[in-house]
Image (cartoon, rainbow, N blue to C red; front, side, top):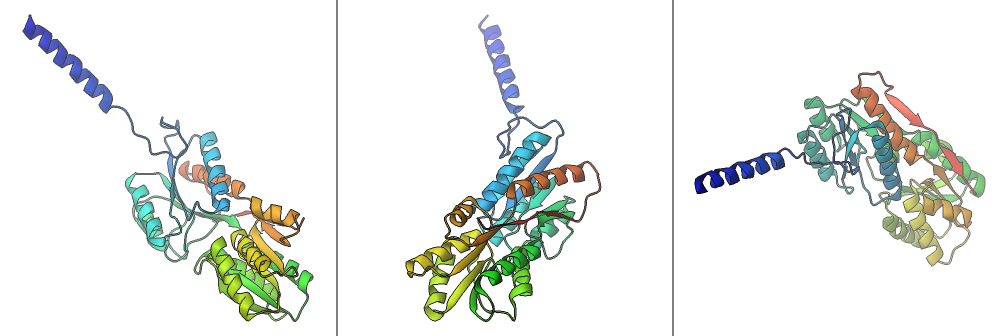
Length: 306
């Protein structure tokens, strides 16, 4: 009798162990614990979530992933080139079906792209491009056109023959190169340009602008490759007691738009991060279903001045 009872307990214990072992772990950042109907899993390596623009882009991607039935795994590179490569390698090990990459640096990311290529995983770049590797599609604003829009606005405010500042983004990133190219297309030869990088960072924008003002008291205008640097520059200008320097940013983040409305920021080039995130997921699904997609998928820009 005791023997039969013990055998029954052992059998019940084995059933519990088997049931627990069939539970599926989830690595999805969109909060879904069950596999999606399509079975598609997409990894998304974002350069940094310490920037409001990329937080908004992420939110657009997450919402569209839920709508389309895609399991989305998001990793934050924290503006660290080596971490981004490691993050992408981890996504490869997790057998994702496609990888979206918003590069920290267009050159350094090539290693990650090539690793995905070798694993047979399609790669789509978002907002910033990669210098080489097999890229299925690139989704971004026309940064050259945006730089030209900012240059035209600044020239209309300051006129020719004056000295202006260009706060550059991360050296080597396609966004910094292209926004700078567009700005120089318009402003080169018409104004004297003092260019220095502040790495798309607000705190660096503040420090760099403070240093520039000390050596260049005759500055009358600033174009920053993103709003974070522009807002940092505004802090430096305000601290110096100056109120006659025009500052233009890029991205149209909430803080920047508020600064435009308050009259502190002269303008910002509006990207549409939510739409970029949405298009990234729509394009990913098209690729995974075997549909043809364009190599470059542009997202419209507009100038915000009030």
